[in-house]
Image (cartoon, rainbow, N blue to C red; front, side, top):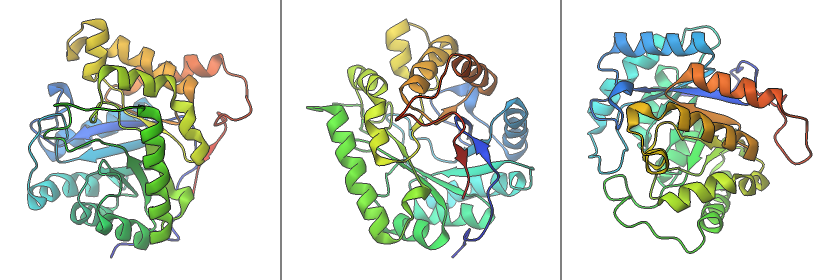
Length: 288
């Protein structure tokens, strides 16, 4: 079992940018696909140079309607990329997976964060996170990627996600995961209607009561196209505007395809901020 306990993470101030590396042939935006190790590593280095503190490596698309891949295939896609990235100074690597077997292989290769779109629903993932000491991103998803957008329904999307976070955080802590090692992601686009996504952005601050940094994955998603009428290739302006709204509502980590634009958005947002009680301060530090 890989263990990160005792390892020192670099200090980085919130908000942070997490760059997306999809080592997949079928992620929802063609421009984000990195077909081989060399392309993935070069893209990650470019993102880090532009300001990304975190790189999230994924080997299975979880876009709506996607089909799962085998554990073996997912590992074969991500492990060589992670091995090539972990020696980059100041870079923290995350593994985007819902499978504990893949997460374990990724941690052994040097990843430090488990980004679990399954929200720690697999007991094996809970046990792995607890035993390894890895940081965890706990995400909300209604249903499964293959069918999650067929007919999502909520009575009160904020209350239901808030309740999900409460339940899963209790399970995580009971399994031995330190609460301060958990980040929360409400799962924009994962079993959500347009109105649900917009409600989450407006009401994001509600989830700050859990005391965990909030992750937002908004980049180029279909709800932006529904609002602006733009295809995925032309959604960068809409993405940045929603980034700004999320930061204002309390987001601490932006998971993005376009790092320079996200960094510029943060710079503009920072220029207008004053420290306010109850919000994650701009000087908060990502540390062990």
